Image 1 (tube, rainbow, N blue to C red):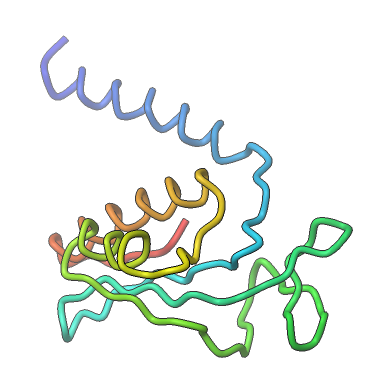
Image 2 (cartoon, rainbow, N blue to C red; image 1 turned 180 degrees about the horizontal axis):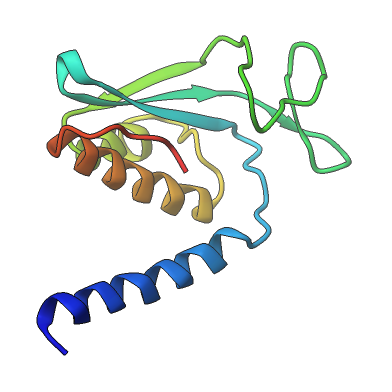
Length: 133
C-alpha cells in the first residue's frame, strides 16, 4: 500500500471514531453556549457567548423568557459577550484566562470549544468555510 492510500485509510478510521463520539450524550453547560464563526474581513475567529438556564428537564432555556432554546434554526437572542482572536490559542486565552468569572463551567464544554477554535483557525488559514459542529 502506498503512503497516500495509507493516509486515506487512517483518515477514514479516525472519522469513524469521531462520528461515534459525536453521538454520545452531553450535559449542557449552565453557564451558556457559544456560537463560533469567522470574520473573514478582519481575519478573526469570533465566539458569541449566550446565557442560558438548565431547567428540571435538562433543557437549555432563555433566562428572560423561560422558553427552551432550540438546538437548530435561527434564534433571536442577544449575546452576553463577544470574544475574538487571530488564532485558536488567542481566542481560548480570551475566554478561559482573561474573563472572570470564566463563562464555561464544564470541562467537556471547554475541550469542545478548544477543538472548534482549532477547526475555525484551520478554515481561516485555508480560506475555507467554517461551520460549527
